[in-house]
Length: 246
Ligand code: PTJ
Image (cartoon, rainbow, N blue to C red; front, side, top):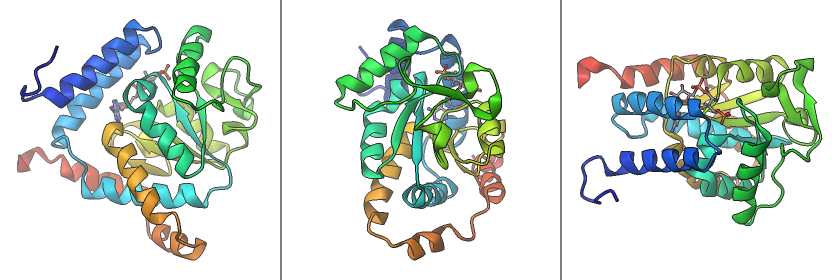
């Protein structure tokens, strides 16, 4: 039991969720390492959203609202930390939800599917029963995609991702919005839009922004997107971590 007045309460609660998800068998061993790396970058960001991340959220939401077949990809860590918020965002946009695991096992997929179903969302894609195809004919589990989801999607939101798959998706002509606390990662550099923030803050902010943008017309949404440079935004995020300013 973590006392509420502990100075690191929020961070310890997230660790607890990650640890429990690992014990329940749906978070990969590497998911724990990935979380630790994320924690380190979050520390450098002051554990708060920054101006560049808020800007990337606006661009990402405008893109999601403009997309023809947007999909939110979920893995072990995303499910452990923000499954309720992902479902809320998917319903608002509306976007599909697809399970896509780097370390794919049938058991992990089934547990994640059950968790999402128990939350009242029954259309999750990428399950063991779904028709899975290979993006760009790459016969690797990380390149599998649901026929009606990621495979035919024009825009995919990938919270907490590995660089290889982002690269495969972008190379196959799809647009990718990544959420990654590390602005130096291959995922961050390869994605079209990178939100350098913790998924626990970024997804709720995306929900609020979607509610605001929902009734904007196409022209207004396109206007929001028009001058965005992911490269510049990543540099600005890095500057927010400037240790000299701490
Ligand atoms: O569940 P699976 O099998 O799909 O596996 C998921 C992981 C995350 C293990 C897999 O995709 C992986 O190995 O990812 P990487 O290459 O370790 O990259 C994860 C990135 O997410 C790192 O750059 C971390 O800094 C970042 N990260 C970790 N926690 C968070 C985060 N970014 C945003 N919010 C977080 N909470």
